[in-house]
Amino acid sequence: MLDVARIRRDFPILQQEVNGHPVAYLDSGASAQSPRQVLEAVRRYYETSHANVHRGVHTLGERATEAYEGARARVAGFIGAGDARGLIFTRGTTEALNLVAYAYGLRRLKPGDAVVTTIMEHHSNLVPWQQIARLTGARLRFIPLRPDGTLDLSDLDRLLQGARVVTLTLASNVLGTINPVAEIARQAHAQGAIVVVDGAQGVPHLKLDVGEWDIDFLAFSGHKLLGPTGIGALWGKPELLEGMDPFQFGGSMIGRVGLHDSTWAEIPARFEAGTPNIAGAVGLAAAVDYLESVGMEAIRSHEEELVDYAWRRLGEIPGLSLHGPRRPRASLISFGLDDLHPHDVATALDSQGIAVRAGHHCAQPLMEWLGCPATSRASFYLYNTLDEVDRLARALIETKEFFRDAAI
Ligand code: PMP
Image (tube, rainbow, N blue to C red; front, side, top):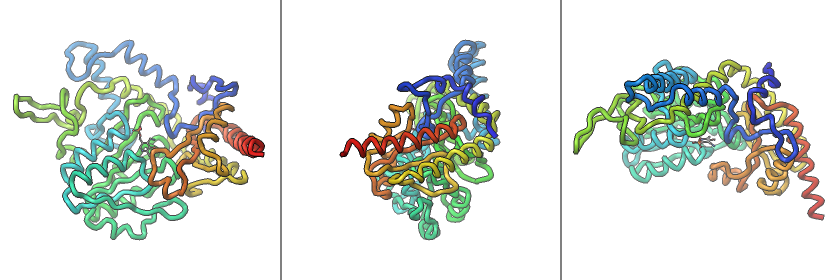
């Protein structure tokens, strides 16, 4: 059992009122809030250790390098990666997925090769592969969905024929579906394909082990796991990364530079051109420390309780439709309310201090599958409470009544 009251005291932003109500922050799926331990780690870094990394021979440069490389080891450990050389800091999931698409896909794919993905992907795991397919002549193939929003794997063997890359999300940011990534990885490897996982919605909530799951690449974002914005990571199997050329070019990623030609640094530096987000990495490591001090399993069971309760409470509201599978599900729920526009719903909730997201959630092909242009989405994290779910349910009923009365 989490001591949520104590946890909430660590989050300064949750202590305020929004529109005259205590804020109920139900939008962690977009960006989670940071505890003061993260904010303090970033501040401490700037106050005591800031300088550029890897280059300075002076003391502050060494401290900054130590902080940055220490953060790499810490974040690698969080996802079960024994060898921290496989952990490349990026701006976030989007940049990490583009890195794989360009540094691996563009160089390896040939006309006729298949990239297998799903129709529930966030645009950041779809659009880069569309571009690579266009540039290489490879084709995209899509794993379809069953009516409940889980993957229909009945035809996977056929879809995997000729596949070089299988890329999919661990958890859908709209449906909440948690995909059987390890099982898909087994089948994909049997066909000779590598497996890329978008962990943006999964890594913050599920204890995972890249070694045990035997995936090849994992992308995730710091700002969804209590860390700062502008920092995230791509983890890749070191033996794959070692065989890859860089994605971006410039300082820090070179071996030797001549006027007409250059050689590359070893991994991970090869994939980190330019001055990295050092403070962001320090903040991300502090976020990982915080999550582990609370305990990922305890966080997961708390979220399961919240999401289960929310599913029940929201499901009782006439005219409210819930999207995605009942269980297991990630810590979020997408819904529609009568024929109200999700933006109107989100605005009405905001007037009561309740923050939810509304829109297509960067998943337009999935919206088409759902048959609606947008949904509202409530997403939960370790600091949310059952009381906030009750407030959400009550506010939705009031919103419904308000719009009904306004229509008379
Ligand atoms: N994939 C999924 C499933 C997401 O939910 C998100 C963020 N909404 C992303 C990728 C992109 O993450 P970022 O914007 O941090 O790069």
